[in-house]
Figure (tube, helix red, strand yellow):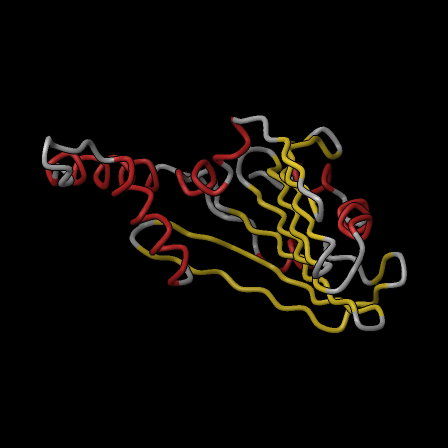
Length: 190
């Protein structure tokens, strides 16, 4: 598991810990949260082999061509995460597609915490909104001033599809999502 995931988990646990009047974290409550997380993580199912996730990465879509692909499995503190990532380019625009299997651990709930909310924000240069793609809850962000965007799709409560766009158009995010067989991904649950 990557360091940023560990830091995110730790900061989320600290943020959710009860505070005393002096606004200091209640360490016994924090330890209880960590223990509950560890217990939940050891009772989860095995992650899908990253090679199966990698096979779901499209070779091309729209005018984007895949320029590279990788995959890995990481385990730490009784939790396993499997992921595959593809890099794509179309002229000056680049896009990455990452498919992550959190194996039903509390990490999936934390990474997809936005799925429990409805978000709809707009500015003069962009937007952020929750939506549904192929029957799966998604969070889409785009900024036209620098042509960057992100799309996260929570699939079957355990897989996260993360699409990152640099130098492209908002519809490129949707095109990348449409090129991934989300139903096949959901069926990979073991």
